[in-house]
Image (cartoon, rainbow, N blue to C red; front, side):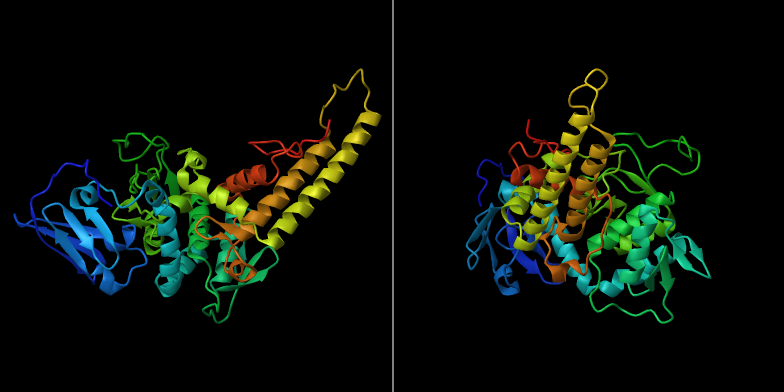
Length: 399
């Protein structure tokens, strides 16, 4: 890739090489300065071998060349942040999360203990029972995380500590564990999101008077936040925060919570749009059969309910088309059943999960990203009058 329209804004290069220890391409200039860029952030180098990546050469005074990979880059373009085609760069955060998942799966011990300790102390606990979730979403997911981490056994109303915690044969997904920590921390007031664009308060405490301004700066598409010491520590261990800023891998994890203070419009993001097309075009047979069964069952129930409603309605007191309480319950049930399917079997970085892959996933209730994907996918699978387009919150019945 060559960006000829990018002017030369750097000294003449003297050398370029691959630093194996950091995974970066280093460009040295004649004036003694240097520039570094993560090698596997560049299109064409992501899947390259170490030897091929190390074959970088300087071309003239403006470019770099990888002969074995047949790749060219302008140094000025790299400095400006052009690491590939627009579609490649649009997928960068999704790819970063996928790479983070793979990396953290291998580095399970690096984050498992900090997470287990954090959840153990932040979850409601009684010695006779163990951890209790009180049927609160954050604590339900926290208990599920402790079970998945091998720290507890599932119990009615929560999780009971194991006498001898053990590493699970199938480690839980890093992104699911990350959102579990975020949910619990936010539930306990240990993590507070600040509105985008808001100036950091000058006093020692904010307008609620109980927590200083921010210690996690807005970065990589995520807004500012304030975390307590223990929460910051576990977020850092998970690779969500580094140097007082959200990491690139944290962005799409935070889409799943989508704090109201940030009001992120991720559905218009190219990564989400592409994922929606992929998810709709590649629905596994077993999942498609489940979706079809849910929709068919709901359509039949709603049609029967509407027919009964029309027969029993008093035309003088009930306006035409007025939904009944039972229909609203059916609509809610439909959305819930579809959402649960997406909570269990779909992830942004991997698309549809197989039965085996789903075993390492947590069912993250009220996952805003999964709910948005459910709406997008269903509007493509059922574009006709059987379902309302766009919002896809209700089933539309034949007139």
